[in-house]
Amino acid sequence: MQALLAPLSGGLRETAARRYAVQHAVLHQRLFSLYGQRPDFPQWYAVLLGAVGGLLARRPIALQAQDARREADPDWFLDQRMLGYCSYVDRFGGSLQGVAHRIPYLEELGVRYLHLLPFLRPRSGENDGGFAVASFDDVDPKLGENGDLDRLADKLRQAGISLCSDFILNHVADDHAWAQAAKAGDPAMRDYFIVYPDRTMPDRHEATLGQVFPQVAPGNFTYVEAMGGWVWTTFYPYQWDLNYANPAVFAEMAQALLRLANRGIDVFRLDSTAFLWKREGTNSMNQPEAHLLLQALRAIVAIAAPGVLLKAEAIVPTRELPAYLGNQGSDGGAAECHIAYHSSLMAAGWGALAEQDAALLKAVIARTPDLPPAASWLSYVRCHDDIGWNVLRSEAAEEGGDAAARLAKIARFYTGAEGSYAAGASFQSSDPNAAHGSNGATASLLGLQSAGNEVERDAALRRNLLLHGLALAFGALPVLYMGDELAQLNDNSYLQRPQHAMDSRWLQRPYLDDVALLQRDDAGTDAGRMFMGLRALLGARRRLPALAAGAPRTVLPSAPALLALARGDDFICLCNFSARAQTQALDGAWSDCLTGQAFSGEVVLEPYALLWLERA
Ligand code: OTU
Image (cartoon, rainbow, N blue to C red; front, side, top):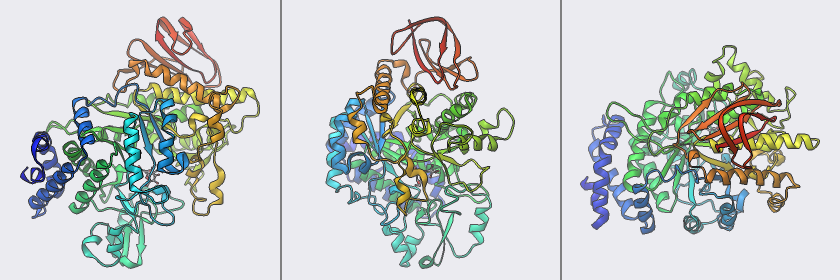
């Protein structure tokens, strides 16, 4: 405690002491169980606390005030008026300054949270869309300078929009200073990575590891001449996994996060959290130590930047997800991330459309536990990555049959096979019977690109509003993916860029279409119809507290092609995933949240219809 308080004075010193009293048991215990066997653990822990205290001392006054407000109202982000938006800086606004000019557009949509995809200085050359970070302390010079980030964060805060940044903590670029020093022979820096002199250990690990990019980056180890050995690289060969068994790595990364928090980042999307800890004989995902690391990080944030939210990006089976929001262990449990992507829910919505049956979705919802306090799922229709099908393996097996074949069929559907309306691509699968992932822009995957007439365009639009209506009604922080609000189509230009051509995730990473933007109020255009349809849903959502993240959720009995999702006693979201009309029985009198139309007894849902009903 003394180490933490030494850099602090006055009220802030008292505040830190109060926060530490709450956090120290978890912080110390988690770090002790990870690193306590080291003889220098007590000194290391004191130095870490001193650094945390130093960063709290340097926290800008405006952010300290925000910390205090959010500490007093820890549920602030669960409100049904919360809405997220996600985009690349260059594709949305050209630069960080350009993003600032888009704030009025975000306000028009009602956005309160903006996730800007990686904008820190990336590896030079190929860099996985910025997910290979060369410096945590510098903005990518192509997008602006550090001052632009500070100014943008300020402007967003004034507009009531929280800024979310990726924090890529599983790996760094092979030209990050740590990797360069390691290559130059610095033994301390070599220990920041996981390096094996020969194939013995890599082969033992590979026996049970999966592959994230089996086609373009097969295997999980890369031979690096300058390191004289095999470096652990889960993703691309130039993304070097960090060695969290080394306490110095944890301390460095915790401080890097707090420095960014002090620049005004409100939310950190913790990239690839499932992979942080490796264990032979397992797939090295979701290991207990990964959770200890995240719980320790959360405790540090709670001391030095409690207004900041942590968001877990763990693309893992449904049953593994809840742990990322904290545990309720025998020691009283510990909080972990505030928010977690519900990737099973996202994938199951797409699966339901392909199968014209909501069984997968119902299975996922049944396995989604109630939220712990002050925590939320993140719901979404699409993001910059592929729709990964493997997270649904266990739900796909529930009704018997071959789960892998079932998911592979869904994946084929989204390539346009199986008589489908979709225009998309399979991701990273050389095996036609394997289900890895699917790529494509939402509107293209839902049939707008291939629509040849008004009827097909209308069906494509309805499917699009259906998936968005589910994400908005589920009880989560919903995040829109840039371009989807305007029904933007696939961007095939990546095929002309040699560095991107092998990664079809670029299909769904278009530039914001300025023409579509100007059409957003024109019902005669696809962009306008999508935008206006979505805006109507967003408006209704804001006035319905039953749609807040933590409010109760029940699945009502329905036909197989329907999902009837009740939120409390007075709201139902009805989704028809099939091309045929479906009937749902209703108890009592209801009215359409958008049009006011009255229903009782039963309601008929047109093909692919979404209906939000409130009790009349
Ligand atoms: C994350 O993704 C990012 O979202 C990707 O854009 C990056 O390429 C990757 O990390 C490396 O930084 O496994 O749980 O299947 O869903 O790579 C983390 C493709 C991940 C992505 C996967 C993902």
